Length: 506
Image 1 (cartoon, rainbow, N blue to C red):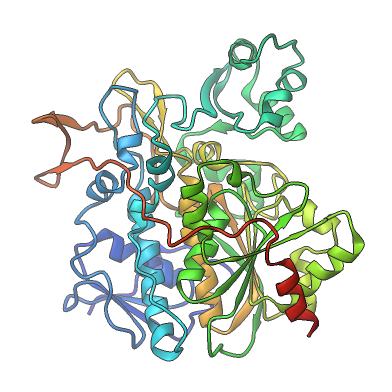
Image 2 (image 1 turned 180 degrees about the horizontal axis):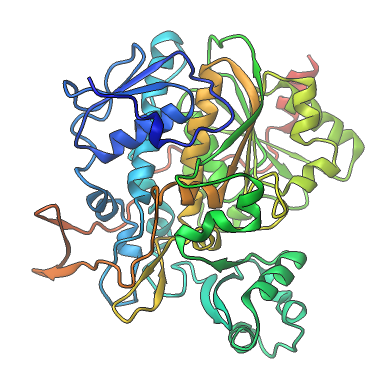
């Protein structure tokens, strides 16, 4: 039996799994990472040479013979490596261990839900390959690696006078605001020439600040080691290794007997993935949308939306109507878990932020997914998966030294996995409170204890027409992204509003 790994961990503020023990076997980095995450949540983690996998509490072992033997193999098998590199060039290895972190979070989720399912008849063990989740969006959309342009095409890495910017114009509104951001006239439908020209003569810090003031997701790209040295991280007292969440307002309640109600106010990918994983565990999920602005992911390919939302009920409200806001408040008060991904001021303005709801329902687990965290000078900055990952320094470098994106909006699935794990730990531990899960912090947590971005990333090479990575004395094939089939069709927006609200009134 080895020593606890506590000296290597940065603990968050809440410990819902305190008093439990996680034992983990050697040789499998994802298993080690799962134990580290459970320790961050309060469990005692011990290395045990007699087991192959992870054991939490009295639950059966998970992960035996499943996780890869090293971080590079995790990355090659995830599908995200196939999305990293120049178009037509070799796939590249990412800094840190993002695919291992994804697999580790999924193994920890599997351990917690296995314990829940043994004690709760309606609970189910969640068995997913966290690494493969990183490529599901790209697999469904048919995306490919595209160098310094994100696979989806919405985000680009652009040099400024004093550094590199990740500029994300994924929404039509972002494109419309480019002229106001740069204070130039933008001709035609393509704004990128104007963006490149303006960035080449101006400070990245100035451009980032101005973009964030008007709501365009733009981020400076640091060396990973510098992430903890900006004003946001200093305010949040961060250091490496970065914790993927902060737990506050922790309230000790009653240990649950069955999976409860999840109210999902989030949109796009990270929050819905979190809700999807809780749904797989047996929770009832109610999706909340605005009548005037439904989830933008509905405009994307239906198979991806169906994958994350099938089996969930859908309600819609007029957020400008006092009666509807009162009904939404009742729904939030009845929730066991709330998931949201809005900027803090949005729900606070409606009187439905976590401080208000948790003061009325302290046993609720509130999962807040933001770009940079709920506290600090950047609390209301906007971010999406590609620019958030770049803002943590998760950038690969080709043989020419040029920067390229790692994966497809990789901060989103990483955050969905880690948010679901924290929510399950809070629920299983009988705790309520606020779980602050920033996209950038989650990505930074995958970069290790003293990260650095290499001048040139390790590249795959062709063997018999197949991209192959030499790692740990083996040749590992670089897998293409794959997606699980959806379990069914997602509900139409608002179709269950009367039924859900009727149950609250009865």
